[in-house]
Image (cartoon, rainbow, N blue to C red):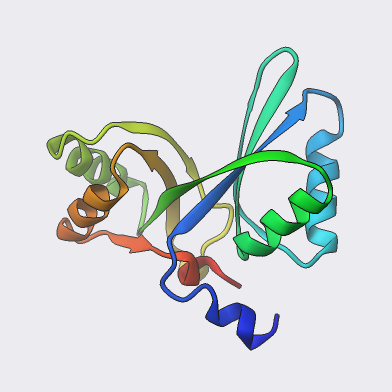
Length: 152
């Protein structure tokens, strides 16, 4: 990737793209093949299906490029800001949820990053107040990730 693309992610929040697709065999594979063929990396992935449709939640290394590609190819999707939290091991999960509970911040859903550098674990968290959650988690000594932290 060129340096101008890297500069555009400095300090930016993490954006999740939720792609709406028919619940048919091969849809996820088709989407992953498309994004990888354009040099994009999926950093986190979660699916939620119903009888007729599926929501594929994705966090990319370059979300602007992913948005452009999905628009160009006619995918219907929404985007929302999420937070990423890095931690050493699973014993820290309770600390994350406890900190958010004490601040009375509602968690909508959570899913893991596929890959994290330096052997650390990471979670993508969708919640009602990102600014407050970021402040609370940092105050409890958790590393809150930004887009630069997950860009390859």
